[in-house]
Image 1 (tube, rainbow, N blue to C red):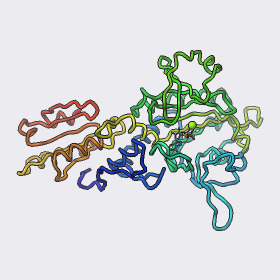
Image 2 (image 1 turned 135 degrees about the horizontal axis):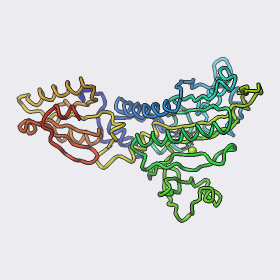
Image 3 (image 1 turned 60 degrees about the horizontal axis):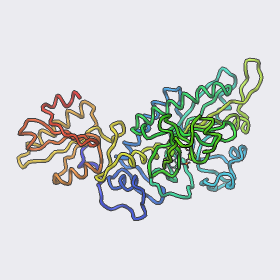
Image 4 (image 1 turned 120 degrees about the vertical axis):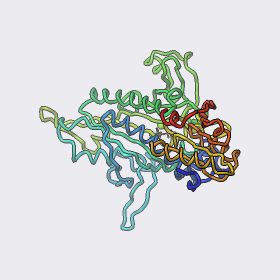
Length: 415
Ligand code: ATP
Ligand code: MG
């Protein structure tokens, strides 16, 4: 993509009410637009990052047998009444609205109810199980506080996977596979080192659930980290019992602020019982399907990466989610030599399917470099009169700042 065609511009000012670093940087660099408090739109650069995050999650969900769907966002009141979750005194973050011909509907904040109901048409016997279904979908939550930028939005993308098993044992096996897949996801997203499997409240069906908490001062949660064992305990459940269960002592734990980037939850038969999702076992006896739910917020992840991977100049994307692989910057000369060589390099890289943002604008070197630092593409290539004199181009790693002169364009392509 040529930067002269990219409609978004970098900017110095951010909305006055935007206090979160992630949103400030992403707005300044042209990744997102703030519509109102807690509501953000994703622009071309932002959508590219989001899609990369989504694809990494998708690959890992497919690797554990997940089948992708896309459920409706609008919710049928009846289903939620059946599980007792329609009432605002039970779930206080619903967005609801009235239909013209009478009746209420809700905007989905999660999808256990509709998916459990849908599965009644597809699960009959033990032969139909296990099943794992997931989606990437916009969720709506009337969050009370929206001060964390895209990390806590009122409208946000969620990957939610739901598992359906014959019994607790097979559910547990899948749960462990999902946990491993989550660890792979956060490693690939470049936040593995800061992310801890965290013991949290389990609801009524398992003693604990597991949150994936990433340490950052921008987080709203407090967790207690056991660095050696690479696990953590959420403040909400920190007591003698959990220390005993995990065979750890309080003095080995370090308090940290963190953000919940994902969580996995055993649901038992809560939803199957309420909505009548049963299967026939080998003896022909009806049994409830055992369920689990597994969430990740790709937008929250993107905000977390922006918090962790940024410096005073701007964003510093990990390669795996960088909107482009290369930011190609041409410092034009008056004779058009640099332009010719860079146009040619851009063509070649693009033909090789390398994702390149080509800064072909008539701007000063200073503007191009500071915009490039702000946008934060993981690798920069500079072509200038100076590099041409040496018959080479200059590459710079955004994270390490390491500069290298690459002699031939072929060397560059082979990397
Ligand atoms: P929190 O405790 O932070 O409010 P939650 O426990 O309600 O989150 P879930 O309902 O389990 O979260 O949602 C699954 C995932 O969706 C979370 O782990 C998080 O990554 C993401 N998520 C939840 N709420 C938001 C939000 N308001 N904005 C962006 N992402 C969110
Ligand atoms: Mg939570």
